[in-house]
Image (cartoon, rainbow, N blue to C red; front, top):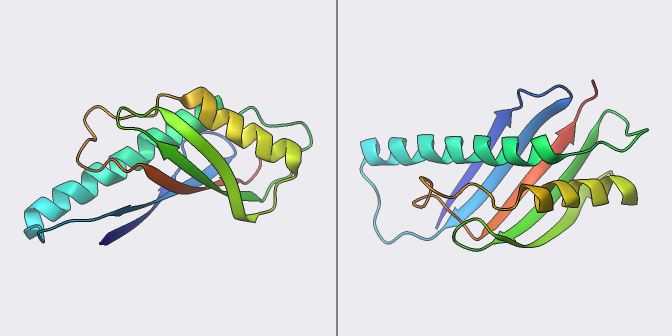
Length: 132
């Protein structure tokens, strides 16, 4: 089992980072150049998911800087989201959690084409808001 943890800086105002952790089973160890290519592709995959979700987020009025929430997403091949939950650590109130879940729902279909080799059915990512 390989575990990847990526922290990607957001280019959008206020949304500081999105971490994507994916678990994939492999039968063979990839040669270094192939592993580097896969690592780059996984980083790109994290960035496009980050953009897709962040672009759909409607920040509730009164949301304080420092919001941080783990979001669990189950998706089908093709990027169709079938389940979204929030999990600890999460310092968001109910309205903020709902806004994060709605952002993922609105981002459905998540990026897939071109990322098939790094696709995972279960995504766990931390959404952070550091203020405007």
